[in-house]
Every structure is written in C-alpha cells, then in structure tokens.
Length: 160
Image 1 (cartoon, rainbow, N blue to C red):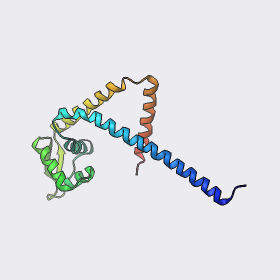
Image 2: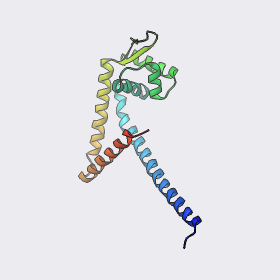
Image 3: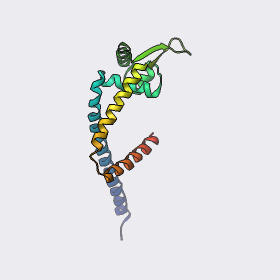
Image 4: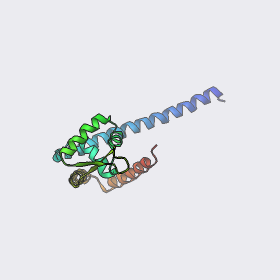
C-alpha cells in the first residue's frame, strides 16, 4: 500500500517529467526556428537593407500604417532607435511620413509602393530558397511537416 507522501512524490515526479519533456520540445523548436530564419534571411542581402529596417518595413506592409510609438512597440525597441530606423527607410524611399488625420501632432508612417515591392520580392526570394530545400523531403516527410505547420499555426492563433 502506498502512502500519501509517496503518491504526492509520484504525481510531482510525473509533472516534473512532463515539464522537462515540454521544455525539451520547446528548446528544440526554438533552436530550429532560429536556424531556419537565419538561413532564409540570407536572401535579404539582395535588398540592400538591413534586418532592422526590413523588419520595421514588414510591420508596416503587413500591419498597415503606424505611428512611431506603435512601430517601436511592435519591434520592441525604444522610440529613438525606431526614429533612426525610420529615417533610413525614408532616405531609401521605402516609407513616407504624413500627418495623422485625427491628431496633427502625430505622424503616420506608411510603406511606399517601392517599399511594398521590395518586401514582396524579398519574401518571394525567401520562399523560393526554402522551397528548394524542402524539395529534398520525401512525400511522407513533407506531409508530416504540413501537419506540424498546422499545429504551430493553431498554437499561434491561441497564443496569449
């Protein structure tokens, strides 16, 4: 017969074991995601813009016009840092700045047609590069990857 203390130990041990399994899974996923992004990001060199500018431009292209503060928050940087990034994007004619219609003191940053084209072309290069490597997968591996992508997408939709 087991004692309550032994049962508690067993339950805690199971939780700890499950936690370690999930931590290991999270660690592996994190590592693979970073390595994958680094490899496809090499295609961005052809744009002539740095990663910080391309990331900020991506927020604007796919998320719509933003204020400097909104853009800084989205990119998790301080406003002075974002101001320098935006200045570079303006010099490259990838974004335009206009007055906010609701509050003339606030400025709206939006992508230009050139910025939108640059980002879409860069995204296409990344996708083609990745596809060229996915071509080496067996049909079963490709099917497994599709399922994994669906799981990750569902996880992201419920992320809090």
